[in-house]
Amino acid sequence: MLPAALLSLLALVTLAVADPLHVPLTRKSTLRRRDRTVDPAQFAKARDRLQVKYGYKPHPSDMLSRKRAGQTVGIPTINSNEDSSYIGPISIGTPAQTFDVVLDTGSSDFWLASSNCRSCGGVPTFNPSSSSSIAQPQTATGGQEVTIRYGSGEVQGTLAQDIVSMGGFTVNPQTFLVVDDLTQGLLDGQTSGILGLAFQALASTRATPFWEALLNNGQFAQPEMSFFLTRFLGVDDATASEPGGFLTLGGTNSSLFTGNIEFLDLAATDSINDATFWLLELSSVTVNGQSVSISTGTAALSAIDTGTTLIGGPTDGVQAVYQAIPNSQALSGQMEGFFAFPCSTSVSVSLSFGGQSWPISTDDMNLGTVGQGLCLGGIFDLGLGSNIGSGGGNPSWVVGDTFLKNVYSVFRADPPSVGFAQLSTAAGGSGTPAPGTGSATFSATGLPIPTGSGTGGSSPTTSPGTSAAHPVSPLSVLGLSLSLVLSLTSALWFAA
Ligand SMILES: *[C@@H]1O[C@H](CO)[C@@H](O)[C@H](O)[C@H]1NC(C)=O
Image (cartoon, rainbow, N blue to C red; front, side, top):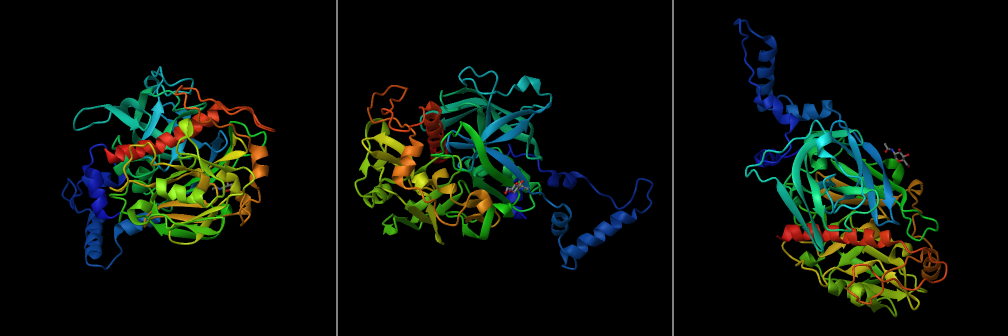
């Protein structure tokens, strides 16, 4: 159950979705009927209230939560562009229109490209005028226009409310942003928007995030969302759209993990009142079995972020990682902030957040060749050239899919924590890191990456094709930049 303080806080937030639990409170109950005869049911209720007050009976909210058994629903997701993003279907409006949106634990806003958007490219768009249930949210200021600023762009739109459903769960009304202008390249292919799965305090729309509304309404069997993310990086013949694994809302799916879930308390917060990102403190990093030195405390705050493709970190920590990899080097120009290492090197990185050390597959650390026998690493320097200051609750690390593909991850609201468990064999887990080596991975992957020519043009140059390389997929690069941008957005907004 949520603390009472949180419920009252939510009630004060003007944009908060109405909570059905509150509705009965507005009804006045009377002990006598209009004809002045006694209503026994009302007396019974009054007695129950007293018994509860003095501890003779359990609190009705306890009884409520038992009676209203919440649900756990698994939603199959799509792996977009070789692990660049993980998207899932969401329905909105009357009649329902269905869209694929990025499932992003690194932000808290929900937005969709609108059919009025001229800059949204060819993505499927939401047509607000064909929904009979759409409404304008009531805001204190009357301001309906919201801009979400990104590291390298922004989305702009109008606040709206409508019925929103995912996996059989419904929030009505859900406040979201109907986007009519965005920086080009933010969306690709079939993706129409972003579903933010972090906390309300981070939302630039100030709306209660979809998942928190479900939680508040007692619709979840457990206060949890869980992810199994598939890996198609380096898989021959992978298409732009592959099975992405499962998002489980309201619990976990025991067939997708083995052993215990290691839950780690969220850092820098006591409750979901003031939580922003899903933040853990990175406690140790090992590279090929060697511990590397990283800054601790607030400099180790890490956003656990399904909406980011890679792992970003502070300059000193990322440099320490690559110093432990022989013959690695920093890239420059357009690829500034990235590092490469000899493709013949197998790089095993493990992360710990205060508990056990979780290994990252060597496949995930090797993003493919950048030429000259060098391969791009999955960990990059987030601090370099960005406006994000660390401190003030901002994450120094953004731990994205490069890590999260290797674990079953559980985002738990109460107590606020993130859990990791070993993937089951059904989820592609073997209990040990994948045996791929750098050279084998390289020839299988061949994912072309822009080289550091620093032309400043909008279309990145690519390295010359190497043996057994895939055809160039500009979408992969776009997907990557989208995901990077998403995290930057959250951070920037939070900093503002
Ligand atoms: C749990 O995961 C399995 C895959 O191992 C899947 O077939 C099943 O549908 C999932 N169950 C739910 C409720 O999502």
